[in-house]
Length: 335
Image (cartoon, rainbow, N blue to C red; front, side, top):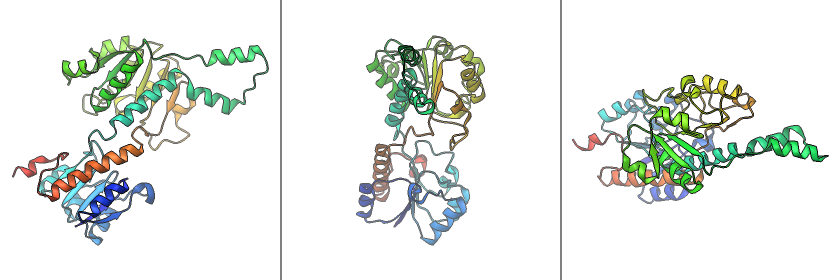
């Protein structure tokens, strides 16, 4: 059987697939600098006579599934439903694999990094020195700079987490080491999970009004789209910070920009934006009370290793006639 891999994949995982043995075509988008269109993908799959597709960014729509001879589709994403026609794949009895939780720790650590960067004005200090060529020629100049860069500590703060899934849970665990009071809004979780992270379950209104720091890790659903809008931001403390590493769809970006520009809230850390890929002209870069990063929360070498191992393990199960563990359409194995 032949496998086309366009996702980032570890060398050890590729060698393991070769030892099965499988014929591997490795064309990761990070090296080709190109994401295949649907028509390009169909052509490659048919010309190379590919049986298994391992991808991360390509869209596998109805035409791709219908016009090729794929036997297995594997996505290196936690929730690839926007990228794959799961119904068509199910009708053709093609399992669709995914990698839930592959980047949970990476995004959680990035969240803590953004919190510290904002509270301690780390990025602002670097930007200030790079852009303004500061020279300390007097005690007055030093004092002015020092006061300008006075920051805050995490210890003793109330941190509100919106969404206690894999990432939110890991964020809460990491925050326990900083001596914070964690409050959680998540209508889909029970008291046991809250207790595991030493948190307090509250409603959204209470979280917004009482938190010094708010971090969003909710999944995108009909109920969470623009969950945080102008009305919700108005409830926040003027000294509060807001962080979003989940999805730009959960926040009204216009309302957030206006709140930051007018100093209605103290600051924000953002890793997801409606204008992606992010460019230097992005409006949030005009604000000193924002740290904006280009969706790099899950961009670590460890994530590549984790997703590779998860996919390889499930490919082996599939080839051995077993049901994969991380499969989005398990019903095809019940028939």
